[in-house]
Each structure stands twice: as C-alpha cells, then as structure tokens.
Length: 133
Image 1 (tube, helix red, strand yellow):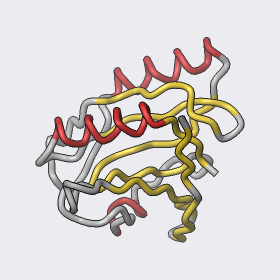
Image 2 (image 1 turned 120 degrees about the vertical axis):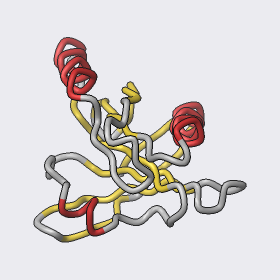
Image 3 (image 1 turned 90 degrees about the vertical axis):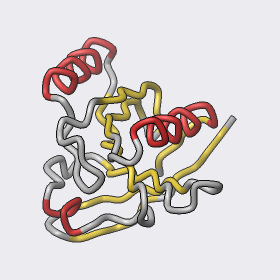
C-alpha cells in the first residue's frame, strides 16, 4: 500500500500538468508505506514518451532521504495521453525493483488518475494507493 495525503496528490498532478506535454518525473520518500516527502525532478529527456530524472537532482534527493532517515518509496512520472499503466519502456527501465512506480495520468484531464505498480523482472503488479487528509 502507498499512502498519500490529498495535498501530495495535488502536487503530483500539478507537476504533471506543468510539464505537459512532456512527462514529469520525481521521487517519493517516506516510511512504512506513508509518503513524507516529494522530490520533483527535471526530465532531462524532455519527452512526452520517456523520462530520465536529472542525475544531480536524483543524487541530492537520495542524500536528503538518507540524512532524514527516509526510504525511497516510489519513482513517479506522468503519462500525458495514455492511462496510468506501465508502458513497455517503463517496464524495461524499472531499475529500482524495491521501489514502487507511480504513474500520474492526464489522459482524462478533468479526472487525473494516480496508480502504483511493482515492476520486477518484467512483471507488473498493481499496488493500492490510499489518499488521506
């Protein structure tokens, strides 16, 4: 299970909207399934189909997580025109099997969707996302 607060959901959606038509990306950190920090990243691919987080931002986020005693919980990115389901590229580039992969879909802009997945050895398994106040 991945627990997000409503304001965190709003932040993820805002990041996706801000970066559209390109994919946004970033990291989610926390403890015990509860997200405590969001690290929005720069997509250095500048692409509507792929993402690569700026390596300097990624390293800074990992250092901050370590200093704060937080775990990498998820890697997030957006799909601007397709559902919140991993693409073949997403699956082939899932380099952190211990992390969830969160997808923010703007395919229906009036009703954005957020879903989370375990992507391990080419397999896709959905994880429940719980939104709390």
